[in-house]
Amino acid sequence: MDSSAEKGQGPASKKRKSQWKQDPDAVKADILRVATEEFATNGLSGARIDEIARRTRASKRMIYYYFGDKEGLYCSVLESVYGTLRGNEARLMVDDLEPVDALRKLVELTFDAHAKAPDFVRLVMIENIHHADYLKQSRTVPALNKAIIDKLEDVCAKGKALGLFYEEADPLELHWFISSFSFYNVSNRATFSTSFGKKLFSAKGQAQLKRRAVDLILGLVVKSYVREAQN
Image 1: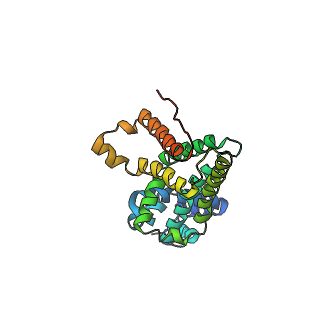
Image 2: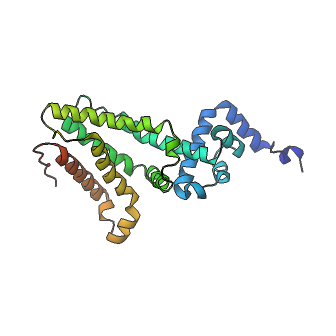
Image 3: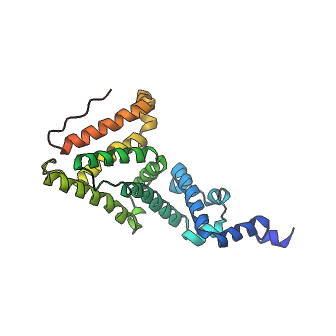
């Protein structure tokens, strides 16, 4: 056998090293993309670094170089999925909107963002099994989470100043309620649809659930809220 192959210096290995040096950010992004799918599907204990390496342009050595170990990669995946979700929220420009419209948009965006990110939901479920032990290690996620609370604080303050919101409207409670509707819609889809059918998970059903979520949230904090008539 060729000695270079024995030492992992074959054509495939040389190609990976070249890509590693030429575009390390792309390699890291590729690792995170595949690792997100692997951890979301199999959990922390069931995920395999060998499988992640097989599906990417990286070797196991490169993965460990960038992320330290399996748990380090898992923590980076958590930060990545939280960053994507919170980034979408941060990009929603609601500062110039009337408070009721701003809150409506925040509810709609959160509902849609969760529906489009089942891996995020699965990873949060997995992290809850671990009692948030790995999330506690992150310095990034708390800052990301604070951004949405700050946005809701601003909306609530404007709503109260204009006499539109109840004084007891609380940004943290609002975030809890909004996230609850949005999260459950994805986390329990398999069991709910198996038990009660798929009506609520059709395009029409999802649109209706989103409208209901808006009605419930606005009805909770907006004085004299009257829900819009829907077909």
